[in-house]
Structure formats: C-alpha cells, structure tokens
Length: 482
Image (tube, rainbow, N blue to C red):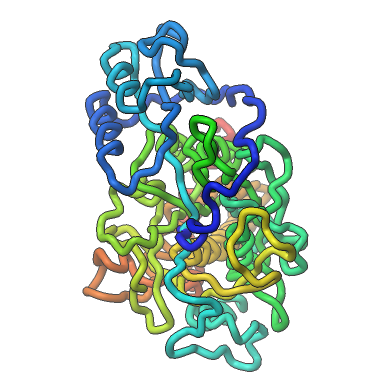
C-alpha cells in the first residue's frame, strides 16, 4: 500500500470522476458468503472505523424486488451495477449512515454497505532516494543493477537458472496504471483497461503502478531495473481516479466497484495471479464477492498488508479478505519494517524497503515527487509484487514440470495455465520461505520471507510434481467433461 502520495493528491485535482456506466458483466451472481446479520454488522462497523474512507454520497446495495427509485431511500438512483450489486446515488440531505439503516430495515435487501475508497500503499516516512541499511551488494556477475539489493536477497539470479518465467503466465497489476512504453517494460506489459475513467488506456498518471509492474517483470538488466520474473507478462489495469463526492474532489482513490470489476475482467483475460498494492479499512461485500470468484476460478491473489504498523489485518481490505495472500514488508536484514502492518499467520514476507524499480518516463499528472525513469520506494506496495513475481516463477516452472510429467504418460494431453492448482503455487512459496521471528508461522512474518529458488526446487521434487500432476489431471477431466 502507498502512503506518500496523500499530501499531493487532494483538492487540486480537477478531472471528472467517471464516464458512462458500462453494462453489467452478466456473470452468475453468487450469494454473499456472510449472513444478513453479519453483513449488517460489518457495514455498521465500517462507519465506526476512524481510518475508513468511503464516498459520502452513495452506497452499494444488493436487493431483490425493487429498483432504486422504489426502494426505502426516496430519490436514490442507480449509478452502476454488476452481478446483482448496484451503486445507489443518494439524494441531497441523506447521509450514508441514514441510507444504510433504511436499506437494512427493508427485508428485500441482502447487502448494503458504504462504497469504500482505497489508497495506494507505499510509505512516505523515509526521504528518497533511500540508501538501504546494511546494503546487500549483488555480485558483479549477477547481471542486475547493483541498486536492486532485494534481488540478491531472495536469490533471484540463482532462481533464474531454473526459469525466468514464461510468457504464458500473466500477472494482473490493478493499480494507477502502467507506463507500458517504458523501455524496461516494453514487451512485458500489456496495456489493459482504465476502470476509473472507463476507457481502453491504462497509462499511468501517478507512478505507483509503473513501479509495481517493474518489480514483477522489468527487463532492464545492468543499466536499468530488472523484475523478479522478467520472462512473464503483466496486464496493467487502472483502477485509480480523481474521486468526486457531492461534486467535490476527495482525492486520488480506487473504489470497491472499480476494483471488483477489474478483478472480474482480469479473470476473464486468463490471468493466473493478481497483485493489489492498495487498500483501506473496511471490507466491502462487492469486493469480497469478486475476489472469492477469482480464487474459485484458480487465481492467486496477493495484497499489500498496509503501512500503518498495526497488528490486525482482519479489518484491512483487500489484505484481510479470506483467501487473499497478505504480504508484509521486510528490510535488508530480514526485519519487519517500522511501517508494515502484520497480524496474519497466512501472510508472506518480502523485501519492501529501498526498492529500486521503474517509474514513468514522464511527469505523472497526479503523482508525487519521483525521478523520471527509475526511483526507490518503500512500502508493502513494493513487497506484494515481489511475492507475486515469485509466484509467477513458481507457476512457470510448475507448468513446464507438469507438461513433462505427462509427456510419456498421457501424450497429447493439453495442460493450460488455468489447470495449475493455485493452492500448490501458494504452498510452494509458504513451505519454502525463510522462517523469521518465532518458530514456524507467527503473526509478524506469517510463513516467512519468500525464497523463490527453494520454492522452485520444491516443485522439481518428483513426489511433489506427481501430487500436483494428479490435481491437474482431475481439473482437466472436470474442464473437458470426462
């Protein structure tokens, strides 16, 4: 997640928030996972969270039997819809709290919640450029920029002897967009949609998303920046926009509806991994629904743990959503950084301090002070793509190993990326991680700091690949209807 931009992005913005409303995606709507009472309690709890940021002129409703105009809030109108969820614009004089109580008092309402706003997740507490404490210098023969100490820390160059990643593996970066014309990102980043402005260009107007994408898949080498998985593809999806509420500029945010829509789109594009270096307090039903749908379709979702140094991720979205892999940030000495949130046994740790990566080759319209081309950033925003990139390496190698396994046993069997069991991708990272803090899993580091070389070796074990291949075969039979 990203904290540094806050001061630079507030009321000076002057761009309209949204374009026209697209049609619903017509996916089969899943029922909310929580009971109606639990949904109601969660929505009310959000209003009491001092750090929660939400629109003060709209709510998200899932109901049956009425339209917005005939609902319990007279004068409300539908601004957006997706899979049974609707964004209702509130009339003047009606607060979010009043609207929610009215909706929940109506038995036809299944879900009603604030429209949550998410910020990017890097940290502004250290002046840039950052000089890492106890720097780890890559060897002269490593083939990477000496400023990228974290690649050496996780033994990236050794892992690359096994795989640098496959172009069949696509990582979706849902962020501020990506400078896909950056020389170190050409060929690795695919220009996706802008879900904030509702157009087909994901060019970065902040800088954060370009930095995140470079951590995953930059191809610069000694003179630029190199990502942890330089052979994979990144799909850049823009979810941030200058957000207006009651006709006033609030700041530069991504709302739950845009993120959920982008998650659905990413799944439809065949991505295997989603990175969410963003977040805020309060978990909303529509984003929970979209992420559960993605996980159910075999996608691995990583999210930044956040930078407030609190020890409870259960209130943080999306890091606290069930099934998401939260990522905490460590420094050069494998210590939890002073800014990183923590508190989940299921987390992974990854370097998130003094991370040198790509930045836009132009001055972003809504960005903060960054050097053009490359710069250092800190934050769990940086740690999350390190973990996501490691997962991309694991998925790439798993695809190769599984195909080789079936080459003599089931010649002609077509194994796709979608057939790879996402739980085994996560397991490979979790059970090969460097154990930090208390023995075994703990609430500071989760499973520990990612170690891609060890994860790839785990996948190479004959017994392990046989287990994975059996899971893949069952998925193929289910997919083909046999």
